[in-house]
Length: 257
Length: 173
Image 1 (cartoon, rainbow over the protein chains, first blue to last red):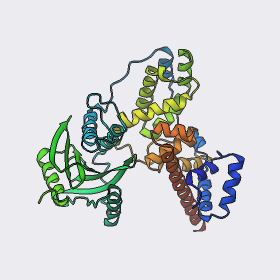
Image 2: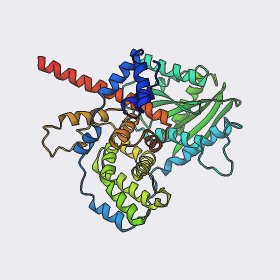
Image 3: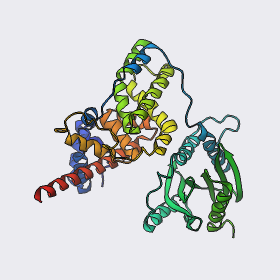
Image 4: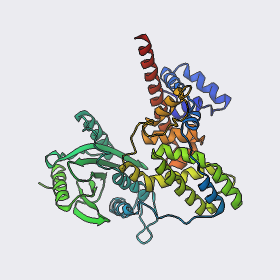
């Protein structure tokens, strides 16, 4: 396909100038793949706004309207403050342990950076998933393999998802997050009992390091490095159970025999 | 912008905020909390709003932030993240269904998208935000936004075609 998707979308959405439209239409004549995409996008040119306005009923909001008109309410406390320390712990680990010289995490002024924002999302995602959220069937081996191949390629070294089935924890998925071209993988597990947990991985130039444990508001964050990969375990897991998971992870990644 | 004008404009946005909150929360209680929290934060930060820019885009950005940081986890933990649009009470069933079937299918198709694509489609095609405004509201690059729009639109096209095929086969039998 010779025409970028975003140009085709803008074309279908009527956002291009007459000259740009003429250019796109001239190129579409010689690009069947792009023409097919345009056809599909046109099939989804639907009355979205009308659907929402017609079908989503709005209750009487006059009480809220009066509140807005009359005064400025006080702010309410965040419901997610519990997880902020976890995000901060991971962010500090990555920013200082991995990225010195490239991304500097101010030691005395922890202002949000791209990294902290990004890693906050990872930690927040972990916090989001309950047992019911991950209680779908286990992925077929082929999908698991595809996910891990993608992650290995992104991180630049072969990565195998630790098999924790003998410890009654099932692999659920592996996802890749990127920022400024750097990759972080998240492998999510669901144990037979207890809360879901994740193993996050990232490429590092720093030397190997044994596990470091920290706890923030009931969330365990364990970090270690081996073979050019930094690992972070995140989860609300009892210490004895978590140690078994981490030992298996480290054995399978070659960090210990 | 004067305080009165800001408050009036924010009040006028309430129905739109409510609909988007319902799409995200899937229940009136959650939507009410989200709308209220959004309005409270908008009022407390009104000094940050730049006159001449779109208040709807600014307010939706606030709602998105509150949802992502505060409320989404609770909603998902209550099992409200992945339910059928009609089961969730998203659709107003107090009116006769005649004439709304197609619109219901459109909304259902949107609702079946992954959350990231659904947000993108909703903000651009329901709320009328530009690609750039929607990307800012979702805190993602513009390229990511358009990619999600394309993926979402393709999925919707597939869903709509599947439904048409089903209807055709039912008529034939």
